[in-house]
Figure 1 (cartoon, rainbow, N blue to C red):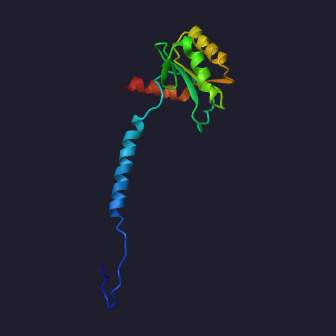
Figure 2: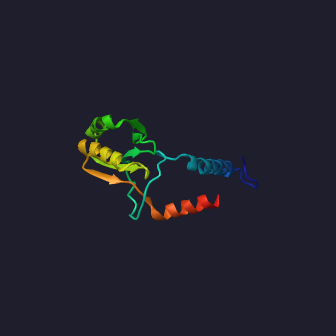
Length: 146
């Protein structure tokens, strides 16, 4: 292309309109799909007043759901093999911290049994995952409205 005038110089301008259109479409796609990408298992956690954990690295999470099924991250495991699986997982890790998420309606004895298996695997620090008390109040208010 040449620009008008006496000189026959090439005009080099980038048309950014298609680029902006594509970026806006991608932004909309990510905004729509992000809420659908929920991690972990659905567990009704007890409430507590504590500050949130730093989420800089991926933590090893043991979950007990309302049906008393035990999971290591997203993989189901029986209580009998929990210690064995954790020993194998923790062999290659420098971080030996484990976090326990248990549904608030699970009997205390099962939670203690799982905690004993976790500690038996040589876990140095076992953290309990809870839900902030404020969020629980908001959820109850939303349930009563619907």
